[in-house]
Image 1 (tube, rainbow, N blue to C red):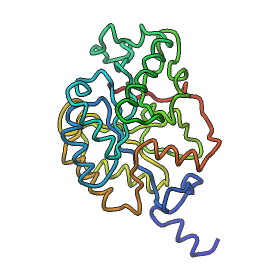
Image 2 (cartoon, helix red, strand yellow; image 1 turned 120 degrees about the vertical axis):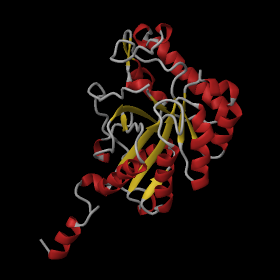
Image 3 (cartoon, helix red, strand yellow; image 1 turned 90 degrees about the vertical axis):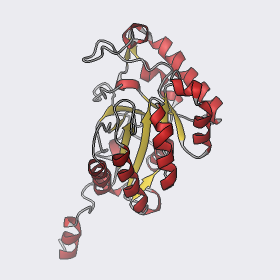
Image 4 (cartoon, rainbow, N blue to C red; image 1 turned 180 degrees about the horizontal axis):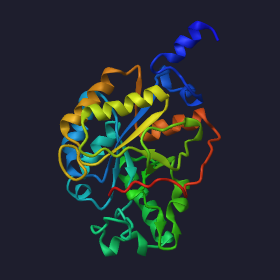
Length: 278
């Protein structure tokens, strides 16, 4: 092997596998999806203003029964008009009450007692409601709690055809774009972490040449929170390196993935690691 080639392979961030050869727009080294679940107030108060200050676009997965859809609906409409993506996080955020530490699951919203047909109707209705907010007809979804099993089967399989892509399962940085299942994209769920830890994640994605999908909840408040300072540190780092990171709505990232890999391998979702977060 030529000495120069050896040196290049030893450099930090040098391609080490087929995954690193994946082509991101404008030669960037990684894609970053900044997503926020549950439509909590701190996202309107803190996350969106921070994203806008840095010129970055995020994806907000709305639970359509959330209070902010009633009390602050116009702010979600404005966010969509400003280029942020509104995604589907179901009507009622049904999760399995039989899993560990799920005392908070209300009996009438327990996924264990809901049928696949009921969940399918609710998820598709949520898409209609989102279209009423932003006028868009293509959509992505994050599965509440990563729970797929309704009373009588896997409801995510029943709705997958309605989405460009689905976030499902906790897995951190994508290991290999060639084997990524668009209907089970892994997420990183930060809670009470530092800005340095968040930055380390995007740097890992750049070294791999793949992508990282953050699923935030509260920003500077609300549940499963990340501090404003940590969030700001991540955004500042991303904005300072536009040649390295492609920060875009999740739907845009996954459209690009589809265009680069027109016949993606749809791996079985039965073995996915599910995110145990509400």
